[in-house]
Picture (cartoon, one colour):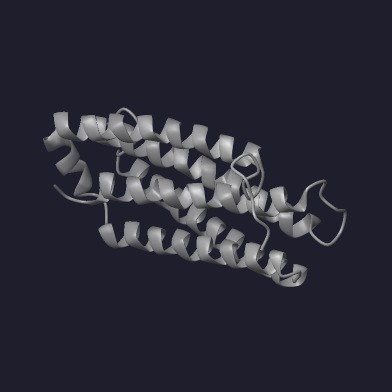
Length: 188
């Protein structure tokens, strides 16, 4: 195992800076949602009645499993098993696509019931925060698939940055959901 300095983290500095900025952005979102939840408990309680905690848990398990697959892909890459790396990243991306399909169905069913932007503070917060997260999942899936397609073919300038950086961004999606899930699905 190669020893790394703080100025040369796994995946390179740029992915870590991107993730740090994204975490800061999401931290602001979390604080705003928590403040809204505190200041409008009745609106949140009413909105949460339309959410199924089992669905939120299924989304959580989907992302955690996908993150595990991405981690296995990084380990496979570092062991020189490129075919395994591609397979793990592809499996992670498939679960990410499953997450996005489930969220699209969720948004669609709630919108059909009148639970959309402008319906209440709860639905504004839910749609904007989880929609912003879903956008990140979409980017993460694209990064994972980019690695799948390119790995073993045309070489990356820095394969460690490409592979570990894509996985790092994917872990960001996991970490963010760990905060969104209780903010919206946990009943006070």
